Image 1: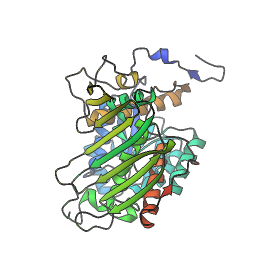
Image 2 (image 1 turned 120 degrees about the vertical axis):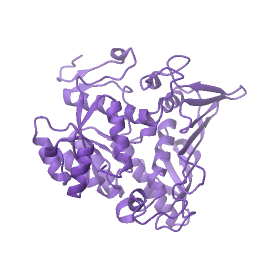
Image 3 (image 1 turned 90 degrees about the vertical axis):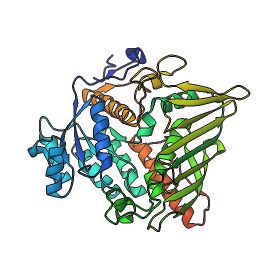
Image 4 (image 1 turned 180 degrees about the vertical axis):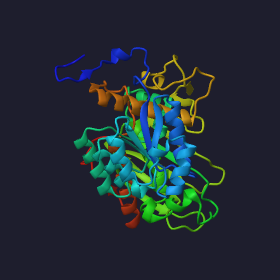
Length: 412
């Protein structure tokens, strides 16, 4: 449907089969960062390829020319599209008739703002790892740049793309829990329990304030916990009291954070994240309790959602079509019940949503609300606002810090 301004607008009924809209061809994706030894780069690439909506055709996979060339060869990227300077990549890819249609940024945190700005300035849509930036001012700047450009900017809080997380979000929004009374989230790992070598690829930059930012654990996994809690509950975090701690081997930044949180409407909650809890791998767990019922979801058992109505036996909802599954969950469901889906599939769902939004923007199409629901640059900025508040609260001995609603991008 064309409303007279040249933009094609869709109606939800256009997607009656509940599948995500797909581009007519695979879109061209470039990477900045993610070369040899960078675990998360491989995860991004696997998710993009599994979505069947992207082909990786260019990259500045390292600032070291030799590593950049070797990594590009590993990824089957042609030599003339293997760069060692992201600024050159942005300019050349924007000038090519077959240039990339989006860039995935998987560098250490301190580079996110500069790299994203370079590609936004050349008209290329952006997909960035979290946290969005290392300062709140830079995060706000990216929100404003994106708004001016009209481009798509996605942030890879991939846990939000599990079908049962979308199921939980839809149930909360539909009022199945009644008024929300409590929101609790934890993210528990153990990989920093023992001292790691100084040249450890993953730990070195994450524990370096110059590259990782002002926090360690709170930024690395605490932002995932913050996003999941606000995404599912639909409530903005309005205030917090925080303690940043080093509970494991000595290190320059926190490995544990405790947050006493307040959400809109005065709803209380707790957020706990640590990377020094022996026996825990990727223990992201959310509990949302309302006046009528509660929901619980565990990332290490992601196929299921525990739904408990007060006074009734708890119900276990499983991923799949039918039996109360909401359209938002069905849209991201790939296989029938009994055929497990996991973390890489969640990444693929996220990249499928990115492709739908970017393809629609490039064609001048307008998708109806709810068809895609990926984390945006505004969500990323909220994550940086969370980090900023945690740092200020901790510095003030755990004092209450308010999180302003007056940020570009509005509500989560």
